[in-house]
Structures are given as structure tokens and as C-alpha cells.
Image (cartoon, rainbow, N blue to C red):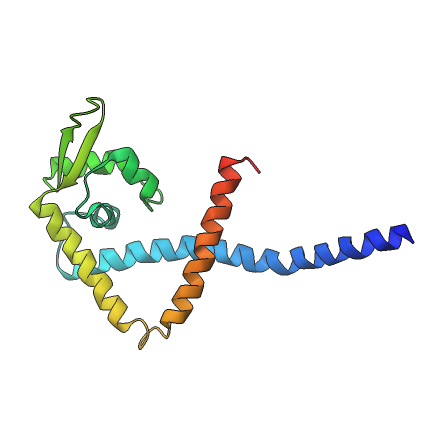
Length: 170
């Protein structure tokens, strides 16, 4: 009788895992693919404007800096820079005049970065693109604000789960 009692919960657990595995793996694929597609959308916007001066990763970096003054490591930990070298892109953006960089007054080892007017222009292009999408995603894309709320809750939980996996070595 004890063997049967143990087998039923084990079987139920195996069924739950069998149920979640395919949708979890699909979500992983979608997250990666969507990030790549976002970079494609940004690249397309800059191509339409005949702006080949920055790539999509650099434009996203400039957008995410916005009005803030950050260190490169802060930018890296906040960012979504798949397959990119943040330090390299920051260096290039400084060289091209999109970013200011200055040593921190408090910690001389730390370099603070912020947008120049040229960088602000790129930020605004991405911000306007996102604004256009926000106005049309429901009508054209068929995704409602309620669906985004559920999606965002799920993605935040997944991010927290992955963070805990790293932090607590689960």
C-alpha cells in the first residue's frame, strides 16, 4: 500500500513536468526570438531613416540610458544586450559622440556615462517608435493591455526564478 501511495504522487509530478516542459521550452525560444526581432524592428526603423551611423544594439543602449547617468556595469546589469559587448559599444558610442563619459568624483576608478545631444536624438527615435507601437499594438497586433499585464507578470516571475537559480545556485 505504501508503494502505491508513493507511486501516485510521483506519477502526478511526472505528468505536471510533462505538461510544463514543452510550454517552458517554447517560452524560452520565444523570449530569445522576440529580443532578436526587437533588434530587427529597431534596425528597420533606422534603415527607413537612412541612419546607418548606429546599429540596433547601440540604439537600444542609448534608449535605455535616457536621462540617467550610469556606469557601464550598471548599464550591463539593466540591459538586454544579447550577443553584444557593452564595453565595446559604449567605447564606440563615446568615440562617435553619442555618449559623454567622465570619471566619477566619488570613485575615480568608475566612469559615468550619459547621452550627448546626438545620443538624445537616437534615444528619441527609439522612444517615438515605441510610442507608435503602443498606439497600434492592440488594433493591429491584437494584444490587449490585459494580456500584456498577464504576460508581464509571468515574465517577471520567470526573471525572478532565473535570478534565484543563479543567486542561490538552485
